[in-house]
Figure 1 (cartoon, protein in one colour):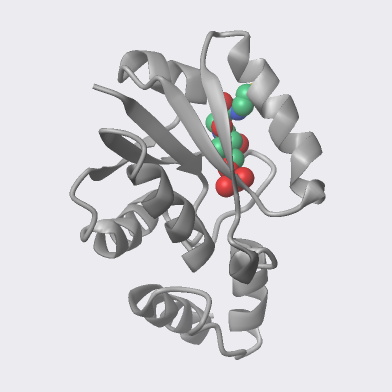
Figure 2 (cartoon, helix red, strand yellow):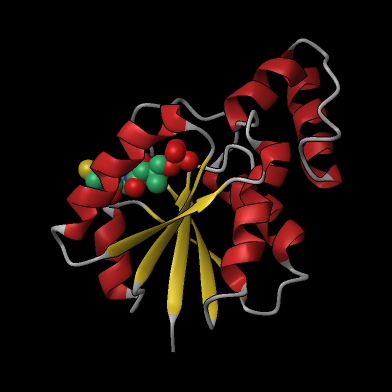
Length: 158
Ligand code: PNS
């Protein structure tokens, strides 16, 4: 079985992530959307909340499952027989960081495959969505309905 992982912090998942997940699912028998820790980012949602949001939005894809991991991505891949990491590239600004990660992970024998983000999503990021939502901006075109509702609830709570 050809199994790939779409890793990320997904805080929260956006239509940009979903586009990559859907397109990756057409090329692998199974795609695992894995929520991992990014030590450079503070998170708004708990891992359990992020998993729940991802599960709801990916349930329509029969070969996509959701998981989380608190260690290195390559260890997740080895433990779970994942052959490839799939990541989206929005612009050249993503490239330096993503290339570095891909090369580090390749040292452990795990391949990374990059997919070009669809132009409609190239400006989109979880950070941008959180910033807009914080100030009451409309993010309904950027995230699924359940994520939009969760963002509104978080903002109301603060
Ligand atoms: O959505 P993000 O925040 O860009 O995703 C980055 C993520 C979580 C995939 C990356 O930080 C990661 O792989 N974290 C797990 C630890 C790890 O393996 N780091 C890379 C080698 S040092």
